[in-house]
Image (cartoon, rainbow over all chains, first blue to last red; front, side, top):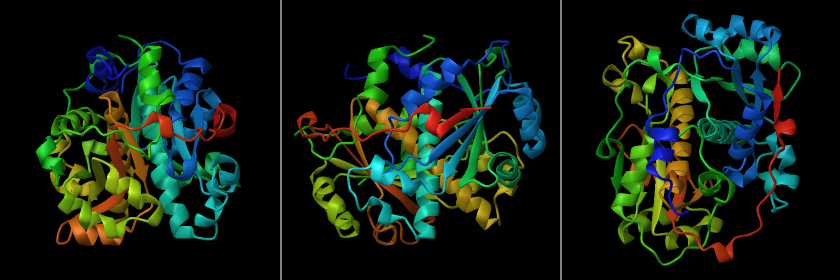
Length: 195
Length: 195
């Protein structure tokens, strides 16, 4: 295969939508594992893979998440069968001797807070985007959200660790009947130039 | 279509690789436009779409980019038919009245430098990841890179604008014969937990 066909492009890009209302259909361990096993293959700087994920699915875990949610994100998130907390390991560089072929790679980051912060954020976010596309590719719908209190999530889920939250994403089967019209996108010539 | 088939998943995730050596095959305007037209459909916070892209393809533009490249990224980038400068518009919020259905959206960011910086970086990076997957979906190979001098790129390409560089990505048809073995990835249970 050289290119995806139209049906595939529709599924992962053109018809895929951010959902807020869900069908009564569970999200299983297998769905989450399949999406991660695809997403993890995506490229990161020096293969650093800083993304860590908590899939919030139990009543107990949802109750821990609830106080951190903004008002506008609360109902849909509490109703979603699963919500990913996309996080990043701020000590990601400790794994580079195993993950990257260049033995010097750890030294690009260790002791350099600015390089750590930028690369954790950039690469964990790339991985979260790969996950969103991968989730759609295995038949899930996504509802990514930045509207929450990162500090509260970090205190509730990551106290005493080197992990920090990045953003959240509901994972479910969306109800197509309850979608809003799609917001516009920049045309190529508004956002891009060929130089 | 409910899910991508194995051949499609192989193309965009499982067999896709970061390339450094290129086949003698051009990258046309159409390839870049097709990839962008898919990538732009991906979700961003409040549909803010901060990503801007310069596709460096001419000799003149390549010569402007060269001094900013790290030694290890120079030869492959100068040899690539196209190199994307993935950038972000730090005034992305000025477009929200057009791009998002909530008229309050501009006020979430305007005058708030920390919210601007975090959201520009997070969302432009999400969009760049969508672009990488979209480029693969239309038959291109990608070579993303953080090893370059952002300030030099900004001075050469974005002086006097509100744009800042994020990272670079060679776009080409990779030579599969010259790939290194793939570096390892974290297993699900190393990077994820179902709570």
